[in-house]
Amino acid sequence: MPSLRNLTPQQNHYPPFVMLLYLFITCFPFILFLNSLSSLKPLQQWATDLRLLSLCFWKDLSIFSKNNNNTLFNNIKFPRKLHLVNKMMSVSMMTLNSKVENVVEEQEGGGGTCEMLLSVLDLPELTLECILEKLPPSGLCSMAGVCSSLRDRCMSDHLWEKHMKHKWGNIIGHAAYREWQWYMASRQDSTNLRQSKQRVWMRLISLVRSFSWSRTTKVVDDDDACKQRSSSLRVDSIMSWYLALETGRFWFPAQVYNRENGHVGFMLSCYDAELSYDAPTDTFQARYPPHGRRAVAIETCVPWERLRAPPVDTLPHDLLVSDCLNELHPGDHIEIQWRRNKEFPYGWWYGVVGHLDTCDGNENYCRCHSNEILVLEFNQYTPGSRWRTTTINRKEHREEGNEADGFYGGIRKINSEEEISKWKRLWPVEVLE
Image 1 (cartoon, helix red, strand yellow):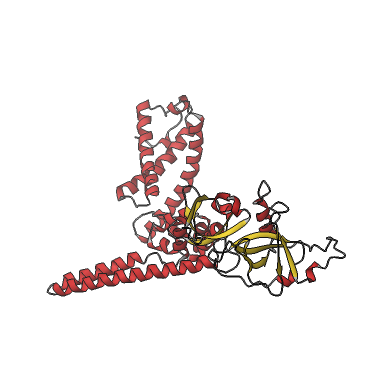
Image 2 (tube, helix red, strand yellow):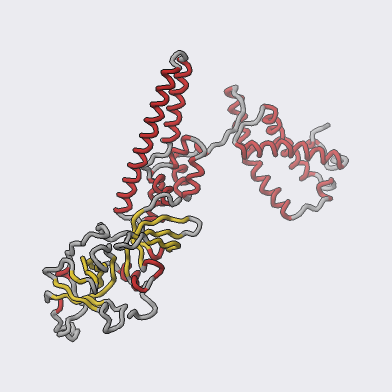
């Protein structure tokens, strides 16, 4: 059959089935070519030849379609989308044609085989690093399962540190980090104990079957392979910590505002608890320490808005040593420790510094800040309530109170506007009695 590019427009009169056969010949190798790119595997040599041959046919077809005005292609009305695909294919074919020509030139010059194998690892280091930084945690986990090289990159701490800070930074504090270190140490000890038992059994098996040196070698190799697979994800990595939090396997210490679903007895307070994340509901389960004879209280569906990292590194039953008492002035916002009795853990309660009874509140004549007696007001309670105000001594304050009114502990001054606005958003709708 003569070449299409040598025919004049008057000679380009082929039967329709010939043109359809021509289309099939030209499209089929191109489909194989796209399939090779999607699977990232080199094609067989015959498919490679057809792929290169299809480029020549497409070039002939483009010339033929330009010169022929009365052929089958002009009589068919293609949809608009097909015309758009045709334009996109033309641009793609121009790019692929240049790439194939370069590969063919290299093949002719070096005498090697023509293979096109695309890989993300062929990207420059900076480009690949930028791509990995843009991936979400789920994307990094998926990329880590591709190959060992990507696994090491996707498990690096500098990639997961950003995700850790973005999602967990507001509720993870020093106490949670210490708890995680103890958790890792316990897991490492159990892993070492399990591996030591496995090694003991392996040694016994190797002694019993010492006559088979090859068998012993295989057992040792299998043991090393198990160690390598188990150590693929470092226990002390940030990725491991992130996944332990995300899956809810790790219970960490934090504090909960208005505990027990906003019970009236805990309004505008913040108590320590152990938390576990529930990914399907995007909420937390909280376990509060026992109060005297009361068992551990459990609260479910705790939202993010009611959580915070402990602002001070103090255990729930320990008294905070106050270092801000001499700096407090009327109108300052504070948090104070309070507990029902000596057996209860402390909770943090929100309040403000008030004026003495002998002061009218005039700023020009107020001397409350220089008085030894410090007045604390809890305005969420109605005036006249026994919980409305309390007084402490600036110089001799330790833990003050009794079994009837509870015990007041250490005080911390709130300097952050964000913390103050947080407490105001939690303000009860009605005044408490």
